[in-house]
Image (tube, rainbow, N blue to C red):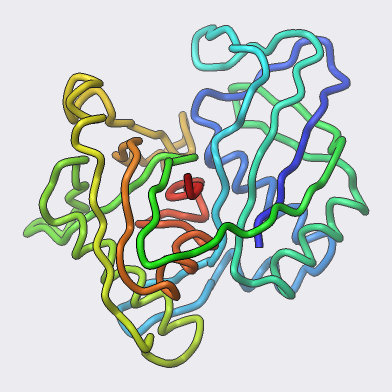
Amino acid sequence: MRIKLTLKSTQQNVVVPINYQYPLSAAIYKILNIAEPQFAELLHSKGYPTQHNRRFKFFTFSKLFFKFPPNIKENVFVMKKNEAPQLLISSPLDESFVQNFVTGIFISQEFPIGLKNVCHTTFMVETVETLPEPDYGTEVKCSALAPISVSAKSENKQPDYLRALDNRLSNAIRDNLIWKYKTLNETEPKDNDLTFEIDKDYVIKRGGEERVSKLIKIKEGDAKETRIKAFVAPFKLTGSKDLIKLAYDCGIGEKNSLGFGMFEVT
């Protein structure tokens, strides 16, 4: 299920960090904690473990959508007066995640976005809207609503982040979705065929892989700061409808609960 939040600030100077993915994720956990602390703690600290030593959180969220282009000052976005940014949040866990999140929203009616030593703004939640699901087929064209991060194993055990035209992308995305499906449903998908195809013409028109690449800082300025490489480009998914639906609900690729991998069907 996918929901859309419209936020409104009561503060005069409205700013959010440029690297807002981690603050947004933290805000989501805080809201879940208001409604169901035990579930929020379980999701945050443990998630859903797999046989491959990975832990899935089974939710994702989009970038912030601004009505007016914000100004950039140092490492923050400075928003225009009367700005009402929108945010999409999605999860296949309708009863546990989505219902608890919506309950938490109605209790607190606040959505804080802040980063230590950078800035802090508390937004009021003006509206909450449930979005209809798209018609899934065995072939869908998709537009990224958040950066996409995919990595492969490397010899030094550090993540080898794949760029937009890497020929390993399709298999890595397929394998990741199969792991997610097995973890969520405790069974193999009936159809495990899936192909990811980037829009190469778009990448070329934008000036190549470097121009569609993103470097996102998590816990910016903290001793535990990490940097995640990603890309933003349209793509096509072909194959299993179940895997495509799961990708839509919880995000494609990795780091979904940190705001990576959300897309819309176009």
